[in-house]
Length: 393
Image 1: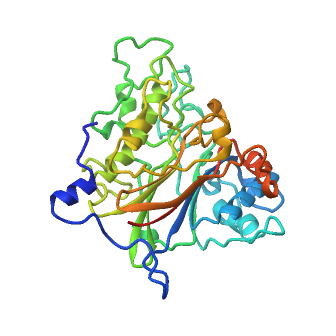
Image 2 (image 1 turned 120 degrees about the horizontal axis):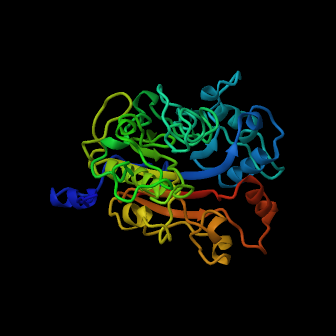
C-alpha cells in the first residue's frame, strides 16, 4: 500500500486547523470538554443459549467487567448473530445480552447499564457462496467451516455486535460485508498461479477470486451522534493470522483486512459498501477504530500490519495506548489477550483530531483482586476489555 498524506497533514496543507464537528461539546455550565468512553471486548464464543436467558456464568462475568468500566460505546466480538443462525428467539442476541445481563446489576456494588442503541450486523462467518467452492483446499467443496466466506460452523458464528448509549442514524451505517478481496488494489491474495504453490498451500483459483470476500466477518462504519458532531465508529474482527498453509493464506488475509480501514480513513476511492456507495471517509471526519484486529505489533509472522497501519500510520493517534498491570506482569503492559505470552490484538484507536484522556486494559495484577475483578476477567474470556476516554483536542 502506498502511504498517503495524513488527514492532519492534508488539513494543514490546505491552511485549515485539524478540527471538525465537536466530539462531546462542553460540560453544562463548566466550560470543560466532556468525553465519550469507547470499549472493545472479545468475549470468546458467546452463543445464543448463553445470552437469551439469565444465569450463564460467562455472560455474567463479562457483564460484571463491562459494568465496572461503563463504556458509552461498546463492541462485543464473538457474540453469535442469532438472526443469521436461524434460531427462533424473540430478540436479537445483542438486545438479549443488554436486557438479561447489562441492565441487571451483576454484583451488589455495581449498577446496571442500559444501551438503547444496538446494532447486530450480518457476518460472513459460516456463510457459504451460492456455488460450491473448495476454499480451504481439503478436497471437499461447499462445506462449513472452511469453505464459508469466514470461518464458522453456522451462519453468524463468531459475529460481533455494537451496544451504545450514544445515538446513531442506522440508515447512515455503512457495511462492507460483500466487498470482494480482489477489488482491493495491490492485495495479497495467494493465487493458484503463484510460484511455489503446492499441496500444503491454501490459495484461490481465478474463479474463486470472483466471489471471495475480503471481510471474514464484516467491516462496519457507525456514525455516532455525539452532542453537536459525528464520530464514526469503525468496527471489524479480521481473521487470525494463523491456522493456514505454507504460503500464509490467513496472514495475508488478516493483513488486507487490517489495511482496509487504513485505506478507508485515508479516503481511498476503490472502496464500495453493501449499498453500492463508493469511497472512504472525508478528510474532516472524526473516527475511532475498535475491536479485536487479531494483529499485534512485532509479530513473528511474516507480515506485521499492526505496525504498518496502526502504529506508523499518522491517520491514527497512538500516542497514548491502553496498558494494564496484568499485562505488565506478563512482560507486555500493552497486552490485551493471554495467548502468545500476552498479545496486543485488541484496539481502541482515535483519529488525530481526537484526544485520549484516559485509557486502560482491564487486567488487574495478581495481587490486586479488587472486588473479584481478576476472577471475572478470566471467566469472561482470554481477551481483556480495552477502553479509552476520547474527546476533542
